[in-house]
Image 1 (spheres, rainbow, N blue to C red):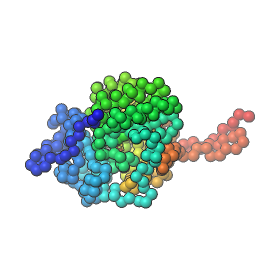
Image 2 (image 1 turned 45 degrees about the horizontal axis):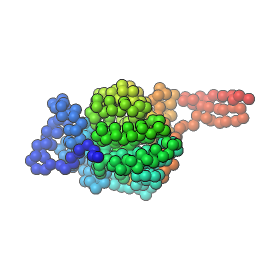
Image 3 (image 1 turned 90 degrees about the vertical axis):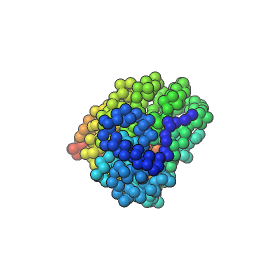
Image 4 (image 1 turned 30 degrees about the vertical axis):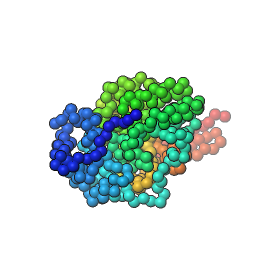
Length: 389
Ligand SMILES: *Cc1c(COP(=O)(O)O)cnc(C)c1O
Ligand code: SF4
């Protein structure tokens, strides 16, 4: 089975120059060519993957130029024109830009960083499946994404744009899941599952649905944010047939919540799909409490319930994105009690080496003695709770 057709061979010479300037014009003003702009196949075909092209579109810093050159052999650069259009071209510190354009810092690896920071490969009973927790599994169906996040925790396996999991590989994973009655939840991830053809994804989902002990199916995706036009009626009508089905959408910054993204989430929510968010805490992108709070508020407005805030994993070349754990704790402190409870995600560290997600919260239980719990609230006021005899 094949994935979406993605052409990554850049054209050259005069043709390339012509395409470049056309693309620059469309990015400048998408309303010139809405039929192209709103066509996700066009968006994928015209992804920005080369230094030549991006130079034409944006003044690069030296560190970015170097980063893009070096990225060729590693997690490659790939940015949809749509996502690129969210970049502030005059601002090297733009939070969208930092996520999408490689920088030289990516190639300075520190000794603690790992190829497989969450020990996924060592918890894999059959290829493509990670079984870490007793009752749920992670199924990795493709290595392709619409846009490659520079901080990706799975950069070891993402971005080669191999064909998705083969039928044979899927059948092996399927057999494993079917044989383990304790598994009640399958999380389909990648790469990005929504990069697959709808009928291929449907084949996987419907096979999983046919297993009587599978209660819920979840999909982890960033496509509604980086390629919102992919969320169309065909896709949504397919997904809604397999309820209860949940979607976890990867968001990083309030600037990502555009009218297009709002529309894609509305379609999914209207189809009865509960939407959750996943956000990686990133230095210089979303590490200020005001930015994170704004993101959480904007998510609730488009019916996405904040789910996880992740400490950035110790993946190779992520040092410039990682923050101290206290930064996340402080953000949690500034959310809980200060805003809607629904706007408060769970802050987790995915334990290096494979211990699973470990929640981190500020301490509200000040002390506990016999029959009494002493607590503090979000304003640091102290309260006593007397326990029953
Ligand atoms: C995150 C993850 C899950 C799902 O965890 P939840 O806390 O249930 O969302 C399952 N398996 C693996 C390997 C994971 O990394
Ligand atoms: S969308 Fe997810 S899997 Fe893909 S590059 Fe970004 S973080 Fe990695």
